[in-house]
Image (tube, rainbow, N blue to C red; front, side):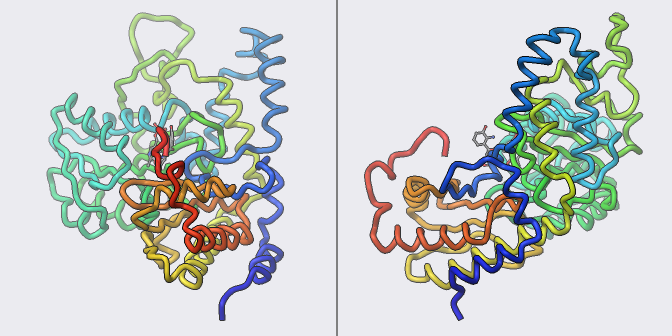
Amino acid sequence: MRLTKQDCIDMDQRDPLAACRDRFTLPQDEVYLDGNSLGAMPAHLPARMQQAIAGEWGTGLIRSWNDAGWIDLPQRVAAKVAALIGASADEVMVGDSTSVNLFKALSAALRLNPGRKVILTEEGNFPTDLYIAQGVAELFGAEIRYVPSDASAVADALDDSVAVLMLTHVNYRSGRVYDMAGITRQAQAAGALCIWDLAHSAGALHVELNACSADFAVGCGYKYLNGGPGAPAFVYVARRHQELVRQPLSGWHGHAQPFAFVKDYQPAPGINRMQCGTPPLLSMLALDSALDVFDGVDMAQLRTKSQDLCDLFIRLVDERLGEYGFGIGSPRERELRGSQVALTHPEGYAIVQALIARGITGDFRMPDILRFGFAPLYVRHIDVYHTVDVLAQIMASGEWNQEKFLTRKAVT
Ligand SMILES: Cc1ncc(COP(=O)(O)O)c(C=O)c1O
Ligand SMILES: Nc1c(O)cccc1C(=O)C[C@H](N)C(=O)O
């Protein structure tokens, strides 16, 4: 039997996380399926930022480093992130971008594994991961080995030359999720260290870094963590590695005594050595406050809802869009998929633009992927229904086939 609109309304009524949507401000009538690229704005954030700007900065000025606790804000934010990714507070540092944190983590991992010169990664990894690896390889005289985005190809390529395996947990295009525990075990058994990019996992999946015995991880603050555009990112270093870790961005905030103003660099104890320069305080305050939307949220329940939304989307696409030439570009098994679904279609770009014009925001990834992210804290089952319904209308009417939808914009 085909699912109905009423079925989806009933699903929302049974959803234990339904009330979390009120923690966000979303434009009226917008269906937002791009929280995997830029998370929605937590409703309490404008007031918090007003206070931070006018009060802490405007009035408190430099005194706020002490009086408002700016100096150890990164550690407080790190503790909140750590709770979402199965890590201890003293294993996470928040700051810089994901790209910069990857640079630090990759450099540190190569130094921990001297004698080995290969960075193993997948050719379908997110471009910044590949570009950073290329930069690090050049600096360290390392070599990059690319394999297809497939767990068995990764396993086959793990030999005694591999220093570091660098993978993105949830693929940005297909949403395929790797078995973090199993692959980490295989990498470590082969003598390699593992770096996981959690850009599309943190805040949407039930990540358990410590339980997986992970070595390093990085991730974004502006996607499912909802910290706002360009929010600080994070880096995780397992406690057992921390005292040996050396990262080359040896800025003063990562120094053992930043305010001693001594000539020579000495790394701070523990995770603090992963810091570099002055953090972007306003963005850090925004991320700190944004993370409060996770208060009381059970991550296993969050993961279940995300899987339910994705399953619902695939089922509705199967039931209603069969005649329009779409493919499913994501795994159909819910355990193998993150919190997003890719459809494929040769006219994908224009179809996404037509959807956006109708108030449903997804995005497009080359060459033919329509990408829909289902952020479980604020996306409803009825939004999924509405999206497929409007997609069917756009395809039936040929509405997508207009000049204004075919012209490419700078950011897709
Ligand atoms: C897997 C992955 N890593 C990293 C990034 C971004 O890194 P940065 O915040 O440095 O731009 C993204 C998205 O932009 C991503 O999808
Ligand atoms: N970081 C982004 C940006 O600066 C502009 C536009 C989009 C993004 C994204 O986050 C894209 C995203 N990582 C992706 O998976 O495609």
